[in-house]
Image (cartoon, rainbow, N blue to C red):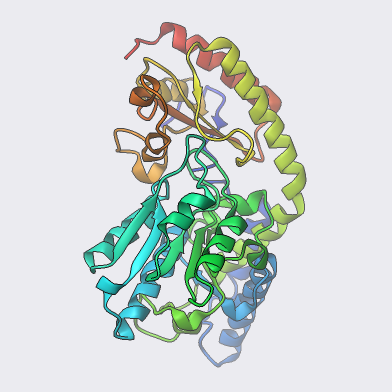
Length: 396
């Protein structure tokens, strides 16, 4: 438990965002519709109405039809359903996995990387495309990885550790141009991008998009898979015909309502918040660069989520430093919470770079992620506290 006498400043929005009051209010109102939305009595029909209204609102934000939105428990399940659900459909059609080729990148979220480990276990061939030193997946690198037998490509839109935003529309054009007669599935883990970018699927050119409400100021128990052609996927959870047959189990109306309301609010504030947080993030970067010798900023500084800053500091134990900052009232991470036990950031490690920096920076990372409640004074206090701590902490 944190010290209640110390002012708390939350700088870990990439890990989890607080629930918007508007979303909570909508969820509280929806609690009265407790009936199973699959039931045909009046209470069930009322619950179904709320669920489908939420689906329609979410579909509108992503530029798809309501039937193309599949509710899930969050981003991890959405990613698994996109990749392994497509794999299961191939299996059911009698395809030989040894004849299939799959592409992802080396900097994806664990829920994507582990899904492709399962694809390899089934016998599929997987290519993991590496980024350049800025964290960018070059269209040329993706083009070189494509094969006639490629069936699915998965590239995350905004990286959850370094914040780098990929040019997904350029990458989808590469796939379509290289394999014009083959319906290759292009999947993207959207993560936190809908906070600051319009997530219209037709603009991105993707077939499948994974989203999770818990990164978008909505309830952590809700997510969605936006899929243009649901018939190309098979369910991973069996037991009923819910969600167009792609996810069995009684639909949870309340978090779906909260998700839809959160999306409405963040869409309205998207431009102003992106500009405000980008300015704070750049001011923080300048303050740290001026006071911390040898600091390295990981990832491209231009094509990046406006609220994220990932740095490596020489001669530190990053976990020890995060705990010291926590004692001073600041909450932040070393890397993705899903890989908190890892000795290094696989994303920063993939950036490579010249020695000796490359040897230490993936182990000495701090991920600072701002949010709607972050103020200019918060950023200044954090910078001052970090610099002061570095003078007194034992060096690694």
